[in-house]
Amino acid sequence: MSNLPPTTRHRLQKLPQIPSVWEGDCRPLSSLADKLATETQGQEQCIIWVDGSEGTVRAMDVVSPEMGKEAIVRTLIRAIENPQSPSPPARPQKIIVRDREIQFFLRGVLQNLDINIEYVPEVPVIEEFFRGFATLAHQRPPTLPPKYEKLLVKTAQETWQEAPWYFLADHDILCIQAQHWDIEKLYVSVMGMLGQEYGILFYRSADTLKKFRSAVSTEESLEQLEKAFLAQDCWFVNFELGENLALEEEDIDLELLPARDISSVFGSVHPYEGMRPFLDEEEALIVYVALKALNKFVHHHKRQLEAELLELICQRFRISLPTKEHSQKKVAVE
View 1 (spheres, helix red, strand yellow):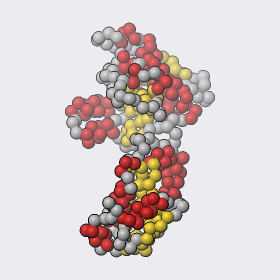
View 2 (cartoon, rainbow, N blue to C red):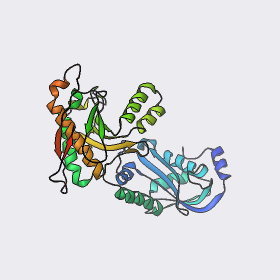
View 3 (cartoon, rainbow, N blue to C red):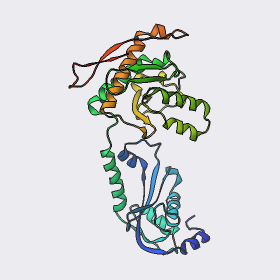
View 4 (cartoon, rainbow, N blue to C red):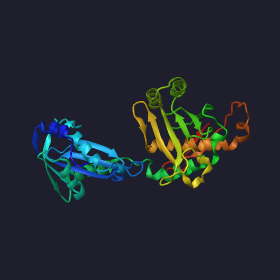
């Protein structure tokens, strides 16, 4: 099918035509994800239509390659009739694209709409749009402070090897007290005993921990669970499949995989910040000390933790801070 239905064509012809040049493009979403430092699923395509005269995005969509060139037309019609920018519905005077196949395809589909469709080597406004995302990506803070990254990743690997979820369920809460910083206590919840998700949560207050656990046990809708999740106040370390690796079976237990295939993800959740996928330097030090304390605690008390009924266990450790200004300073935790 190479033409629009007559009724659709008549509807579009009734819209005013403005003296604008629109740019259209379809490119792998991975090119945008690279600039944003985010993950993408599969080989999805990003379709974008912009008004080059105004410099505004009129429509944007993400589709699989199997959707074909028809998806480009669908997004264009939405840009004409229902733009996402404040601009009113309208037909452009000219469209430019950087793909000759798309040019010829659009010429056939948009017949009788009085739109001139031309090929150009580059679509400058769209290129600027993507460069803007690249700039934003460079301005983003790193997920971990560079001077602590290797140490934190190594400590998380030690946590994976200690496997605290063998001994602690998510309702077995540890309390860490550090005689440093402005945080009196951290409440530690270990995920992984069920073999589904592996991670450590360091709650900054007992109140938010209790509220989250209560909400999870009573709320049923996804919206309520999401609200409860974002109301947490904690740092987290999650263990996931390493980058560029894929599982043949989706439900496979990560513990069945070699340790080299597991990567650690650090971040924070707070009601006012949402989920933040990075730690600053002070946070990185706190999480490092908390992880070291957890590792030491599990290592020293495995026999006691294996008991069916856990008794109160207290232990005091001294942990060196990995900074030049604190090279000789140790933090006491219990």
